[in-house]
Image (cartoon, rainbow, N blue to C red; front, side, top):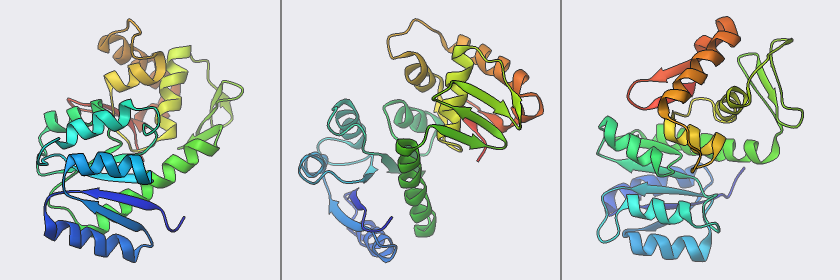
Length: 226
């Protein structure tokens, strides 16, 4: 889909120019700002389709910008790709925990960035429009609450179905245990990280050989292999 609006937030002028140039070649409309305060103002006034957000910003930093955007019902639907030189495991976990949809570490290839942007925007559209999700011959039907591997029905618990649905909606995305809890049970549901691990083990067993498509990302959580 052409002409989608992207807000790029970074205080490195050279990087802004590079990203602006490359994404415009792909048909996107790019707005750029250099501070967290300006980013929040731009989000409120122009409602971008996606935000590219640096973590290290003057004033309000990227983490706080992400929290504010994701906690506001009017803007929480806007996907955010965090961009940062901080590539440690803990930094990535924090970014994902507070609602980022993807995380790219500097330095990065402009082509990879463009591919990530395209993927995030496409997934958002697919999620909005679909009731059936399928990958690797695994299918869930949200309307009928049924799941299949090939043509074989799966007998899943409600928790297992919710976890599988979440991963099928966004194959390749890494979900932390807390994100899985929030997405499948609600943020105030009294469930532990351990219970998520147990449900994933049970889900893998029921998927049999297809269970290998659910990958453990050490120190972070789980994802469905893309």
